[in-house]
Image 1: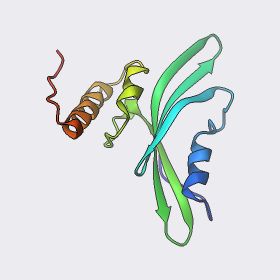
Image 2: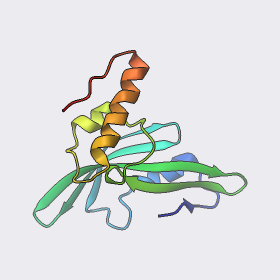
Image 3: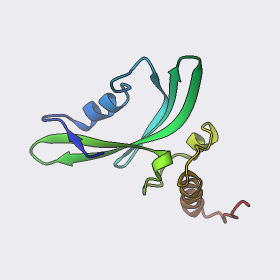
Length: 124
């Protein structure tokens, strides 16, 4: 998926748009979110029929000078390159069935451990 830019939009406008739940706002509820630099991290709860599932979403945020801000959405299951996701988001969200998610979560934990000066011992 590519970038979506909105003419005249501020960063706050884009954050609000990303948190709106897109085309199905009744099905997608943002439980918690945090902006870290150019990353909007969101724990989503998706409800449909008799089922609810949580997942970590990321919207990359970027300004197109002279036009406005934009975003590029993705999910943890896609194995994003960004690793600034808050650790608490990992704790409240189950590991998705994805070949990329486990490796991505390990990188997120390593990033936070390096920031705090702690040693990370890989699980498994």
